[in-house]
Amino acid sequence: MTRKTIKVVDWHSTPKFRFKSEYDFSGEVFRDEILVPALKKYQHVHVDLTGYNRYGPSFIDEAFANIIRKGILSPEFLEEHLSYSHEHLPRVVEQIDQKIDKACKEKLKG
Amino acid sequence: MLKNSKISKKRFDTSLGFRRHRNSIKRKSYKYGRFKNLIKINGSSYHELKAPRVLTIYSISESFLPDDESEYKITLDFINDLSSSLVKGKVVVNFEDTESINAAALLLLYATVHSIQQTSKFDSKVRLSKSLIVNKLIRASNLKRLIERRELIVPCSRIKRLPVVTSNDAKYIDDIIDYIKVRIYDNGLDANDESVLSDAIIESIENVLLHAYPKGGSKLHKQWWLLCDVIDDQLFLAIHDRGVSIPNTVKHREWFERAFQDEYPEIYDEIKNSLTPSQKFLEYLNIKPNIKDKHLINVSMTGDYSSIKTEGRGQGSKSIKYLVNENESGKLWVFSRLGLFVYNSEEDSRLIDLPIKIPGTLIQWNIKIR
Image (cartoon, rainbow over the protein chains, first blue to last red):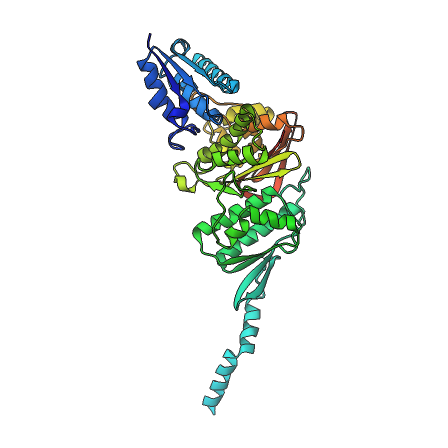
């Protein structure tokens, strides 16, 4: 089984915001250029968010939950192939869980 | 003889006394600002604009009766006068009589001067107050330097007091948070508190960039201004933009009709029942006189109506409300156009009509420093 760990701070030291049009290191850029390609290439991807505490809710939403909203990958696929952690900030992990959960419900509602 | 009389008439026409008389008749109908006066500095004439005793936008009563002498109105009148004077020419902004100035008014003043500076080259000076506290605020915020067109202090965590921070993108966001972490919390902000505070700051700035200004406009024109101030154990944060205002933008959000229905079900039903088959909800809302700016701000601040269509975009007030709810003395003020929303908790919020329009939106909230 091939595994990949992405350390977000190795990608950029201060990621934030939702869209590429707002900031070059936004949730959209992280999702499209880093996370989704890795999910398609490796059997399991772990995102380590340790080292930065200022992601903001829109970065989290766009990078993780919008993979489902945009229909890029299914909730079941993410459940099986994606994990995430932050050593000092359980709040961020909870935020990702909640945002993904909300996107799944919206997807079910149609 | 005839020639001589013509010459003397011409002399009279151009004599100083006649010109003064003619000017006084011509200017009789002109209206002057209550703060203006003409003074000479190094041989040049400057319009002196006297700042009021109190500069504040918080002096608000429940009903906000249109009182000419309310501090809110006096402050806004002064800011508007300053705005028109700077465009015209040389100005001395005189704070001599100013005894107090609060963060939101200071931010509004700063943004007004800064916006004018982008388009016109004014020559202006500042006369400081007799109050040391007022002078400290005017200096530390960069307002004096800005008005006098001197080099501004750059925001960073090494300076004692953060000036007004302004940008049109993500620049300075981390400097603001670093400053709060290092200078205000003395490096005592833990990871969780840092994250909660960052969420609120990032969310409010991102809201300005995404929604405050007309769509398709240049990134350069999406300016925001932020000021933080510490009073006792409270950190006050104020963010201002000079965009199209919440009442103008909220109506065009995809969740608006649903949110309006939830907030004002009776008015919603009344509107729906009176619509003609070809009429749309929004068209009718625009001509409904009893729907005021304060109601539209209220709709923008309630719940979370994000949907698939809006790509998960909520109204952006959740993180700030969370911080306000966590703080016993927490309060959120949202000024936009002619409306004001004051939030203490989910059970306690007020809607107020403003007597003078605020340019764009100003949001202020406070958090407890632990």
